[in-house]
Image (cartoon, rainbow, N blue to C red; front, side, top):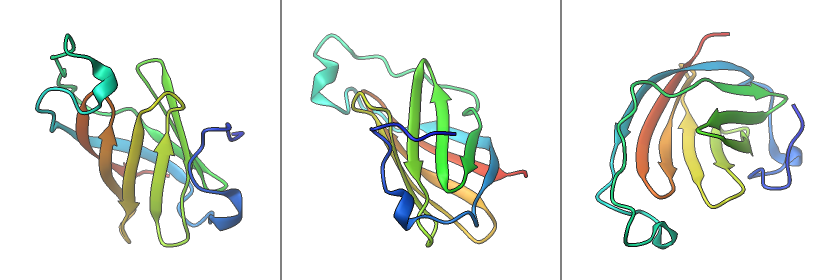
Length: 119
C-alpha cells in the first residue's frame, strides 16, 4: 500500500503492531440531517448500511474503500487512527488491546463504526 497526499498522520509516528485485516462488526447511523455544511440544504437522507467494508493496515498505514472513496491514515503506537478521504470526509478511532477498532466517520452523514482484526 502506498500513502496518498491526504493520508492522516505520518509514517514517522506509526507502528506495525496493529497490521492486519479488520472485518466490519457494526455501523450505526448517528446523523440528524447534515453533518457538514457542504452537504447543502437539499441533502437530507443518510442511509443505513448493514456492515462496513474491511479495513486493511499494512506497515502502519490503514486504508478502507467506501462508496467510491478511499480513506487513508497512519495508526499511532498507542492505537489511535485518523483517516481522511481527500474530499472532506474523515474517520477518527482507537484500536483496543483486543484489536477492536472503534470510531466515528464524519462527512455529509455521521456513523459510529467498529471492526475486529482477523489476521
